[in-house]
Image (cartoon, rainbow, N blue to C red):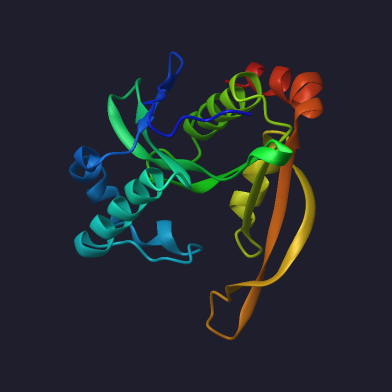
Amino acid sequence: MYFDFAQDYILENKKLLLEPLEMKHFKALKQLSEEKNIWTYFLGKSNGEGCFKEYVSHAIEQRNLKKEYPFAVFDKINKRYVGSTRFFEFEKQIASVRLGYTWYGKEARGTFVNKNCKYLLLEFAFDFLKVARVGLGAHAENLVSIAAMKSIGCKEEGIRKNFFPAIDGSGQADAVLLSVSKQEWKHTVNTNLKKRL
């Protein structure tokens, strides 16, 4: 597994384009960031211009530190930026990477965007980076996100106890951990997901 944080990786198909997140994307994504329900299940609330500018700056800084690699997601059909996602927790010794911090504006949710985005990212991870697994996760109360990950072929593999604050403020909530292995990608997930694009 080799990943060059200095390289500008562009992932695209006929419907979607993922390009490295830069400050130039701030203006295009800021309006989406003001949809407060986007951040319900995030540890960091990034709605509002001040918070979101810090969110973008921090994501770019994490790339510079070679810890994370964020993307801006562009909808080629409707010609607009619709959200962001990223790779993180690069583990070269075990050929593993995590995929997350994914959010989309309300007009993109429930459309072709998520499946195409996940396909491009998984294809890149398994076929280019040659990873053995891609890990994903979600707040245990985020049933829509968990269902979306399972719908593309992710397998639930465990629970991380008390990882998030509970949404109602009453204490802590668990995180649901999911993954796709290279065997699953090769034998089922790739083909099944590609048919649904």
